[in-house]
Amino acid sequence: MWPPAPLTGSLPWPNSILLDGDAASQVARLKQEPVGDLTILGSGELVRSLMAASLIDEFFLMIHRFVLGSGRRLFGDGAHPSLRLVDAITTTKGVVMATYERVR
Image (cartoon, rainbow, N blue to C red; front, side, top):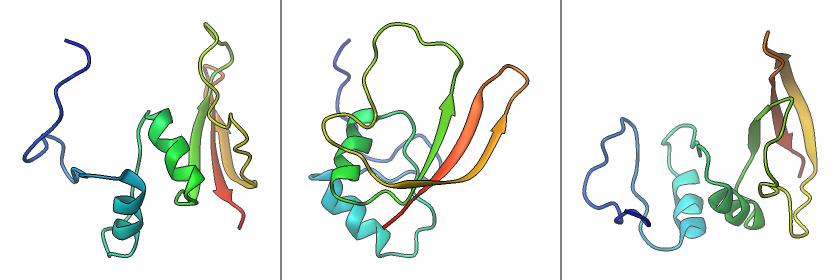
């Protein structure tokens, strides 16, 4: 069924927090608490909204050597953050795993 039903109650994933309301304000609040690292897996729309609010400090990107389809740009619509490469490795399959810090 699409779209999936909204999540409620406790989450089935360890160390996960369900945010309610505006994601940017909730993430800004979480960043003020000693909760450890906050991670986003695979939600481009959420990443773009948090980038617009300057709430992302580091990007870990897996860059594959081929592209299927047109996809959606991560840094589209005028979003061009200044990034500095801090680490990168290439797997035996040719995937580049790169970590970038946001330069403020």
